[in-house]
Length: 154
Image (tube, rainbow, N blue to C red; front, side, top):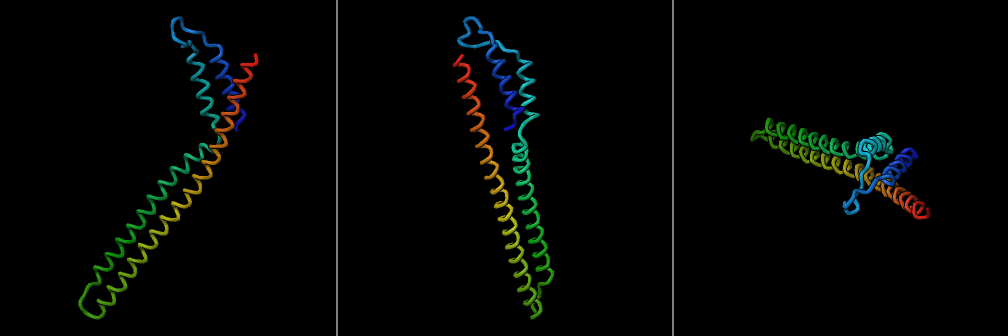
């Protein structure tokens, strides 16, 4: 995990430790809101690259799926237009209809394949990101536990 983020989390804990209790507040405390906002902004600025990458992956997934859908619709539309322009009752027209159906089927299969591949690619990226995020979460929980333990030991 990013050591800068660890440092900021330590500062957040420090600010919380220094918080003054509110009389009759039922455990509520006064904190330096401006300092907390600064620290939260610092965390955002120092967020691990993998989190930013995960957001980009999710965005790319949608873009890829939309492009695949658009491409498949375009291919299907072109195949249908081609099929309509060839329609006739002659032998040539029958052959043309057969060819148009083949093109349409091929286009639909290609579109399905592109979409399947895009989904598989994005799914693999999301799984990798999820594994990383779980590890990062474990690190954060471990660090929080260490901080709590060190406060209790005082």
